[in-house]
Image (cartoon, rainbow, N blue to C red; front, top):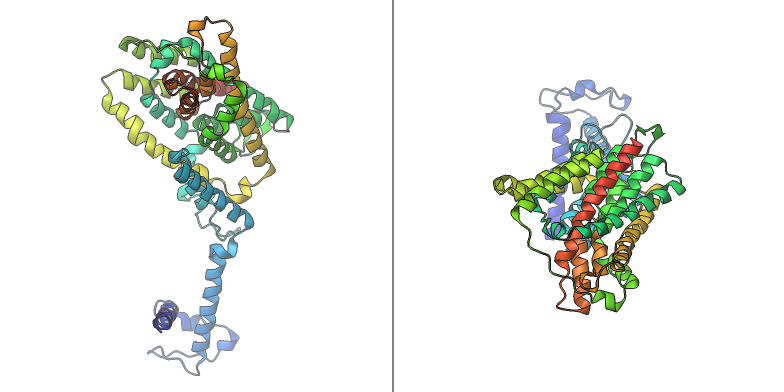
Length: 452
């Protein structure tokens, strides 16, 4: 009984509201009625209607309003693609919450995917300014930071302010492992060309092999943004490339361990490395200064990324800009991560994202990530051929050469502990890990210099 009463009250309120909109807020409506079926309607000063025609008119208008309401609902405009993408967004959020896979990235991206695939009525003459691709919408303005490559350098500033380069400074040869892991980038570039992507698109897809989301977004915003680049008419691949890069970053604990075990023997996994030497404050300050100058001279196209990375590290290591460093590595990077993840996710609307190109990008991304992991591990084994027994490298840390900081370094640590609970590899693995960040940015700059 209570439910019936509630439904009755709800229906009455809806009816009164519609009548209010039709009559009270439109006092001149009666004069505007020209329909032949309502030609006998007359309205008195007290808004009383003769012959009962106005009641029929109100009912017709109510039905018409309800039909229009239904036309604009998501239930009416949903497609199977929208539902698939919403499930993908929910899956991303599940991975983040249930397994703690990159939650700071996957929850904003997953939420963005759901937001971007809420279906709404679209017509040539109607612009609700809701979707990310509709001029004037809030999401469109926020997406500007992705399209113009604004967010990635800000992310790099925060990364620089929170990164300790001590392990790399103490053992510079481990930088070679970060360089070796970039093999995935160039192998994927060739694979994308083979599959029919043009040069700029292939360059953007290849950078997924570095497992560095901001770098992938930055490069694709320059080379695969839906405009003509270097004489090639490119598709807008920012969304698929970004989602692929962040997906594989989040799946580092799943993808890398089997490859690491396949390519190493039990004896190699038990190798103990010398503890890193202590690094002086002067070395910590000089490293980002020298690194900025050297890397950007080699690859000027990487200046927006590496310049901000090393600038953030200078703020951290100088010791006199603690407030700026704290802001860069906390508040600022959190805000930019929210905006970047949300807008990248919202850009994956079903009609844009569910294409054959997106599927190929995901396949190539997976292969490039595997090749990058294998490249780092195998190069560590090659280096051991030329090193003395006391200076050997545990090949597990070679997998940290991809740019997924610090997840791939943690994976190397966990794999090492499985075979020797007292063998801690984390500090050693951080060296190729941060070298991978630098290496992927340099590779992106080289790609830009050739393809822009």
